[in-house]
Amino acid sequence: CLGAAMAAPAAANGAAEFPRVAWPVVGADGYDTFVGDSALVDCTALDPYPGIVPWNPTPQEAMTLCSGLRGCGGFVYTTATATSAQGGSGLNEAKYCAPQSFVSGTGSATTGIGFVRTLY
Image (cartoon, rainbow, N blue to C red; front, top):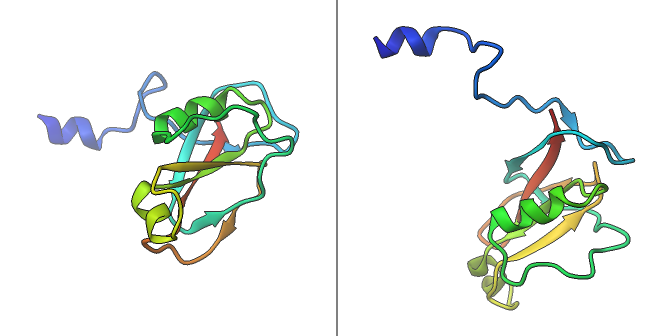
C-alpha cells in the first residue's frame, strides 16, 4: 500500500535532503544543495567575481559553477524572458552571490529567483 509507505517517516538512509544551514560566510567543506526562493531577488556579488562563467546558463550549470567555488553562497537566476523584459540581453543570466547576502523583494516577471546554497 503506497499510502502507508508515504506516511512512514524517512529512514536514515532515505533520499530526502534536509538543508541544515545557510552557506557560511567563510566557506565550508561538505555537501551542498540549493533552495530556490522567488522572494530573494538580489544579492551582493562574489568578490572576486569568477572570471569565467557559463554563457546563457541553465540553473543546473549555475549550481555546478557555484558548488565549485568555496565562497559562493548561491546565485540569482534570471530567465531569458525576464532579462528581455528588463531591456537586457534576452539570455539567461546568473549572478553569483556572497554567502548570506540575499535581498528579499517582490518577485515579478522581470526579477530573478534566488537560489541559496545550503550546507547539509
